[in-house]
Image (cartoon, rainbow over all chains, first blue to last red; front, side):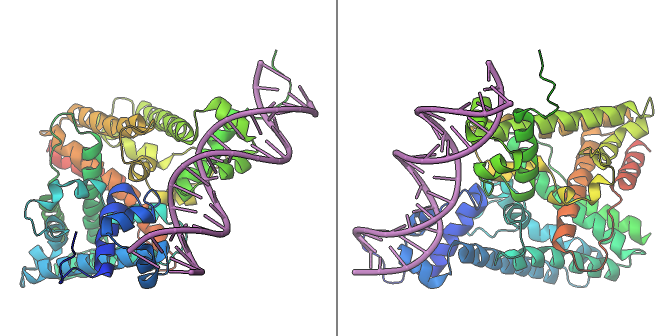
Length: 207
Length: 207
DNA sequence: GTCTATAGTGGGATAGAC
DNA sequence: GTCTATCCCACTATAGAC
């Protein structure tokens, strides 16, 4: 196949392939050659751009974290000054992540069935020595800090407590997707109305 | 005639070692020889008792599921006829699991920092062909069915909805442990009062 | 009969040389 | 880009110890 002149750079293709495979099959279970084949990239190119598999994993999570934060930023911007909407904006971001240009509901794809990519990676990356560890930490820190800030802005009497509830709803919603994926074939998996429950939680904490 | 030797059988030692290592370091990242060294068992013994690594993984999750269900059974029995307590009994079970004869709070150990062993395994075991898959399914099915039943017994107007909230609190509480483990070194991780929040949820759904 | 000790094989993975 | 080296892993075979 003759390559088009304006082809996606190899580094980008590698990250795209890594995102697909690491998230859907797991990091340790995915060999670098599978990533190379998917990306149509030669081994030497991978090691020219990254320090190795660990470096690729770190870059994958770094990019995912950046995009996730941007998605949340955009959801926040769409809320304007509505502090109630801002407090539950994380669920708006979740509904549009990861962005799929092809259209369709992101929460319906197989990708969503895998839950939180950072918690999943944390299971496979035990120690803080791994170059991807900072991004695992960054995800949890962003959620903690931002939810606390937004809870405070919304006028919660106990911002920490509300932030904890919102985070539980966030993690609960992602876990529910994984469990729904396991139980496919059973009766319709009741959709989990995380955003509505979050709104109710904010209302209780500001009453 | 059983020998007077008081040593734990090799099969049990293998499962104990597998429980420790698979849960703390991840399944794929843990080599068979690491399990053998921890269990002080010869390779041939492992393959005499299990079909291979996959078989060991399945047996590990089977035993963990049985013990988890027993812990929940006991927590339920301790509730008597108190339908409110029964509805939130899963959090009592969580507080005493896994049972550690040495005493101490199970939720404080490193083991707890790894979250739900079945969701973690689901991340590493993509396909339903794996012999451990039935136990991943069993965990989600048990939670879904029992929580729905208990929500119904408690008099919830919408048992499915209450069960979904309770499950989100359960998964949220376990995820909070993982995030707390990632953020160690930061300020005190606010403890997540899952049981109290569950009681409040039940109250709202039965009002 | 159950377990241990040791050595060794084949395959796939990471990584690097040409 | 191709090709090759090196390592680790799951797994097996044999033979002996309690």
